[in-house]
Length: 216
Image (cartoon, rainbow, N blue to C red):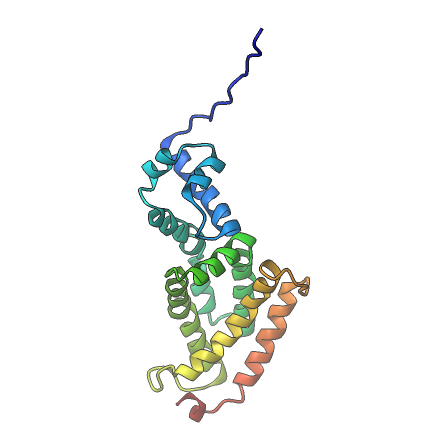
């Protein structure tokens, strides 16, 4: 007598739940294999057909764009910029709090690996995200540092390229902590908050030695 095999059926989900399932799996998938990964393999991993995947995302680029929104845009906290500009709180604390909160979002395995894969594949995700970070957070940081150090405002001296690069060095140095941890799997200091505190303090001490001539 032939042995009967019970077929495992995929749970039926609502369209919105199915779409969210695809997005969440795509984030994990691209974080592991990069953007060269095939949608056929992604569909198999989810347990759906490739035509069903394309019903929700007609092209791979459409799916990648949604991953960008999910990973980069939806995780930006609206309160970050308000907290950075709240001058009732010492600037040192504002910057430390920002980077600790920022790290909780972007230092995760999926975020960092997708960011790196995006850059290596030539995808525009990184350039778009860098522009957001620079315009929404780093330029305001320059203004707050000037105010804290008693330096002229941006109306008198617009933010200079070198001034912006100094903030990028701070930002990039703290982000590289996550790259060392999630990409190179190298040993990092266990307490990121203490790293952020020390780095911000050193940066602000140096900023206080600047003169208006350094802003030109």
